[in-house]
Image (tube, rainbow, N blue to C red; front, side, top):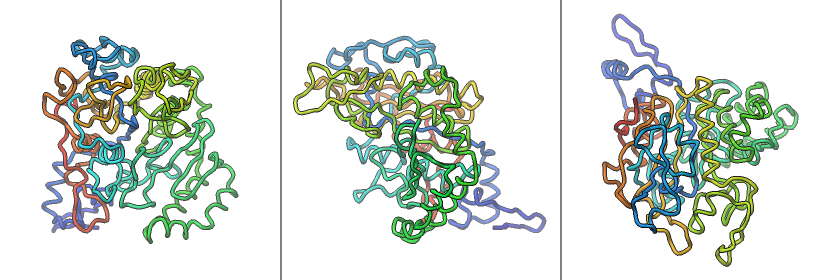
Length: 462
């Protein structure tokens, strides 16, 4: 796509064209040159998006309210951190010593108390229409804009899938679905569209080739004639001919001590796997992160932070069923830490690990759920869905370490400073990745549509 004047020929790459919308909105050379001059050189930034599926309580994580009434403040006290004046929940002592590496957005506010609509909103930055999710999740869009960094390493992974309650690829279709790494990371199964690589036997080429036989037909059905078939085949062949994936999936290559620091369980090993995938060349990894136990967590993929009941017991351990469990519910035992201590272990270790490897400056880490939880503890000793207030944590890739952005009122019910919504988080994520959220448009739409409506959050970047 050449643009030229009397003296110079400018060859626009596909990436540059997508970045400023050339060819989609008819920018001429003068507009292109002004846009290029105003856009800083893009660093090659990756992202690990840790989705706390079900909605983590901001009171019991990053916005404790010790001076609130007992029915609001809960059982746990705040703890001082290595950032003077910043307090977090006492059950996160490891993160308390690493708050200088992260920023907390305390005046976050969503729009929906529905798991599906709330999740689709925060995972894409676009509120879903009544008919269902249309716009893609962040990772799928980044993959479609920039493609793979290296052959044999997909751009976007979901662990175990790319955000619960969502249709990650949206209108983009199956060609831009995430590679999902399902089951236990130590014995995983990988899926992409209808391609299923059982236990990731990537060295078994004949078995993989057998699975490719009907991809054309399957893709056509799944994607209504778009480019899914070519995408599936090209990705599969790259996996066959490159050792990058096999190497990245080998958690046994990590020191045992480091693996234990992440957490010697499915939950912690998924976070470790995300680091290995980013290091191997993935652009975006979405982790659907919740321990697999309790009242609702029966299975390897559907753990949840949705603590309507027994919040304080459920957040610490699922090993033993509490004596005061609600009637009619089955308790699913899980021999290991609960959501809160495991988040503390895995997230603190991830930040250290990325920093020690020189990857934190080029890796954005985002931690959030689809909403917060109600200020008042309910009669079942839990908290319910609450989109009016919540907390988001971000680190790396230029984020201002130690920053606390905004505040909620004395009972954590509403932001008392400017609220920042999912659209603003989206704009900030794209900004960190070097993508102008207002001058980059969704691909393949006839009407140029910016990928984010929000604003980059004030004070978030150094």
